[in-house]
Length: 96
Image 1 (cartoon, rainbow, N blue to C red):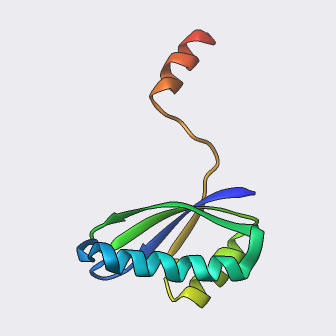
Image 2 (image 1 turned 180 degrees about the vertical axis):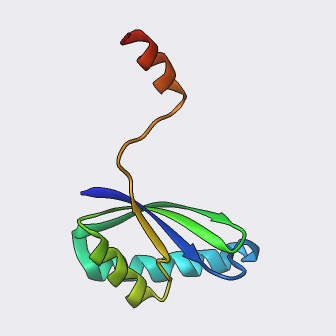
């Protein structure tokens, strides 16, 4: 499966309570169960009026279907091509 970052514009999401976020996660999980093994939610970051969600999915279309069924918008869907982190600098230096 491919990895995607989904940017969702959700007014007021950063001010939601723990129980409100739990309810949102439960709604998302319910739709994921309907869609099957071709899509998996890994984690989400809540920031202001947005969430940034990390998903594994077979393609963008199933992400759009999840958004449609769950009612959570998928304003921007970006496929992750590569990952880097602080250790990338050390590895790159060793390869020279």
